[in-house]
Every structure is written in structure tokens, then in C-alpha cells.
Image: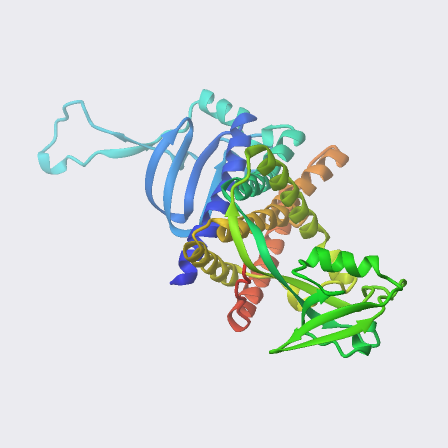
Length: 405
């Protein structure tokens, strides 16, 4: 039940916003959107009508969809629908000389759409638009997710950001044969002082170490209930992927207060945070190949774990009295959703963009049969991958790290 709440709060709104991005872009470029669905079919009820678009509520609460005119036709022409698809109730109005028992009930007559209706549908069909307009429509969903993440990042700082008052600096890893290893520093030691100066945050600790490369310094650490003081000399030319002292550090705030920022500062810091998260998401595969990120850390997380983390972030927001945990999560998921859908994989927006670029280069589209087959194969592979990730989620649940000090 908790995961369901997390899914509905975190994932469903972002998926609906994604589809709204497609819908608004399509409408702006002259493509009819026949239906905008909340949830996936079967339909429960039609909510209302806006222009040509029916807004519907559907049974499966797995996001939403925007059904555009002609999106499955793969052609710029709209064929007249089969006559039997349209029925009109025709009542017998003329008096007939027959017994009541022989009178048949009203019958239905098949009526095709008018030429004007066919022409209008053709003009507002997705594949009647130029390749460049179709690319913009395909981009509408992912760009809406990225825009949402940017706005949420600004809101994150405008509503209040944690200002750290006190911090512990903990050693999380010690490299073998490093200066830290030679004086028996250990993972989980807490740095209390450098050259007798206490109360340093992680930036100050790093600055002190960098400033004294090649010079001996005094380091006081806490280990359990004891305090130890050692002397070591940070290296001037450490090996790759090691610092001067040979340790990995982690800042652990112990006291903080929430302070809203003025709109200008929130815009600046929110934009910086958004671009940093986007860049790190794009660069993660490279860092994974380079071994900078453990494979276990970078493994895909599916709907179950995302929903689990979402519920935990909601709990954190309530217990801490701030929107920061849930906003942090929504920013990360929204960026990931936008970038994932831009991957040039058939069945995703990026795959449709790829097909459209190929159409531009070839001066003609790929055959409808080939496009449909490629999309079906890719969708099957994605569903299989989704199933594998779901199984991993079940056997390897992921918990939410503290998003606040």
C-alpha cells in the first residue's frame, strides 16, 4: 500500500505532465489530439471535452496517454474508414400496410464520414505534418519533464533550503599504502581538528589538506569514545583517483535550519542544481565504464523501488516539516524520465525522432510495416527489461538516503 501511494504521488503526475507536453505541442502545431487519458484503458468515464479532445478517466492508474489523429497510420494520407464503422439509427416514418406483428424494429444504416470530415482529419493528422514539426511534437514530452524539473529545483530553494550550522566530517574509505593508512586511520573515523582547529566543515577540511601538501600536519580524529591525534604529510602528487591524504570524506550535518531564498537567488541556485543533475545523469554511463561509480550504485531502479523511495520521501517531508525530500526526489525522477525518453530506442520518443531523422535523410519514410515491426520488437525488449528490473526491485529493495541533514 505504501508503494502504491508513492507511485501515485511521484510517478503518475510526471507521466501525465509528459503526455501533456506532447498534447500541447501537437495542438500548437495543428495536430488533433483525439483523446487525453488519465490512466490507461479501459475507460471509466469521459470527463469533459476541450476542442477536439476528449479527456477521459481510465481504469489502470499507470500514467496517461495522448492519442493523436493518425499517429498509427505512418502515412500523410487518411484512408476513408470502413463503412461499417459508422452507424446511424434510422426510424421508419412512412405508414406501411402490414400487420403489427410483421413490423420490424428500427434498423441501423452504415454512414461514412463526409468528404469535409475526411479532409479535415487529413489536414490535422500527425503524419501530414512536416518531419520538423513531428520532431518538435516528439520532443514535447521529454522537454516538459525537464522543464518541470527546472521549475521544481527553483521551488526547492524558494521554499527553503537547509543552512548547515554544524557538521561532522567522516572518513568513509582509506586507500592502501596512503599517508592515512600509514598512521592507521580507519573508515568511520571522524575528523575533529586539523592543527588544533576544530569545528571545520568538509570544505574547510579539504582546503586545509590541500594547503599543506608536502608539509606535516596534525590530525585529531574521533574513534568511538576515544580521541586520537596523528601526524602525517599529504602527498603533492597522489595516484589517480586518490586524494593527497588517501581518504574519502563525507560531510554529515548535525545541526541546520531551513531558510527560504529570495526569488533571484532561488532562480540562480535552482538552475545550477538542475543543470548539475542533468549533466550527472547524462555522464553516469561514462563514469560507470571508467569505474568511478560502482555497478551496484548505478544499477537501474524500477517502479517498485521508485515508489518505495517516493513514499519514504513523503514520510521525511512530513516528519521534517519541509518539502525538500519530496522535491529532491521529483527533480531526480523528472530528469531521468525526460532523458530516458530521449534515448534513440524504438518505442520511445527518441526512437520516433530517429525514424524521422532517417526520413529526412532518405527523403522518404521507412515502410509502415517495417516501422511497426521495429517498434513491436523494441517494445517487447523494453517490457522484458522492465520485468527483470522489477524482479531486482523485489529481491534488492532500495531505501531512501537522508535527503536532509
